[in-house]
Image (cartoon, rainbow, N blue to C red; front, side):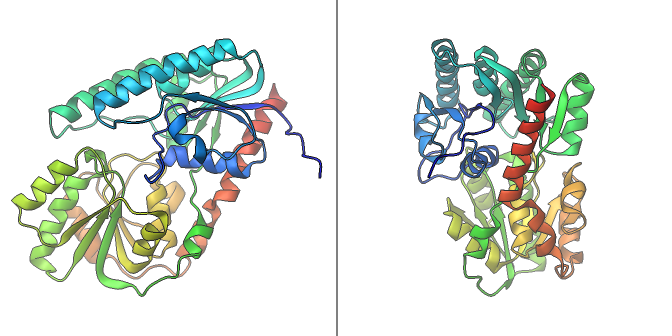
Length: 376
């Protein structure tokens, strides 16, 4: 059978991917991997060697340094080398693409896309970094570097890119105020409903809540400790399982020990099947995150018919409606109140979430890129 020729040539910059075999994949990476797999555009990809197997394309791979060390210094070193390699690949490759897309607003993707040859260039930005409150010196350094990088990269994006794909309407409005001359599209992150449906659902445990995410302060992990300290007093039978790893896990473990909490279990990294089984078993999903580009974990939990308690972020209601129970941002006491006042899951919750199934999201991004080409 003859292979269908893609309607336009596409280059995707996934140079910042931290994906490695046997590890969880970040939300932004997951969106692009699923798009590459299902869009039939077969793009060329700039990607680290360690993430190559995640990008299912018959296009050409431009490989950069693998991810080996996830310490702050290790990431800075790897990203610096990848930027140089990505720019070098751009000079060596003579092909001029119809569209080149940076999969993130970070320098490791944005700087290379600036130097590659393409008729139209764009960047995917799921959210802008808000003010962050560091919990120790290491996070203070990390947050400071991230804020400086964002400021520089937004200037480069404004100069280098023709269009921007925003993760939600709130982010689009923020970016449009900074770059009113740009063309904007909105793209939900989505989730894999078929993968969840393939897992045999266990019975719900009414005394179990779970959290899924990186163990970093931005995800509200230390707020969860406060919440569970209160619930250990008022609901002694209630438990929380936290799935995920991250740089602030030692500090989290120390805080749990300091408060002598026996109702929290750190489960570490879970496979997709294990994660979905946990979400299907837990009656509640606790998600006091301070910043999200979209909210993939929250979407998966809602689809698994968990009663979700979360801090209210500006874009949540436009995506998830009133299905989660919202608490005031940064208010652990209000989070406990939202839990205590939460009722049964709405009958239409699972059906509502199907609009964000992965194949539909991949089709939306393909349509956005077709629009870019038509308008060019």
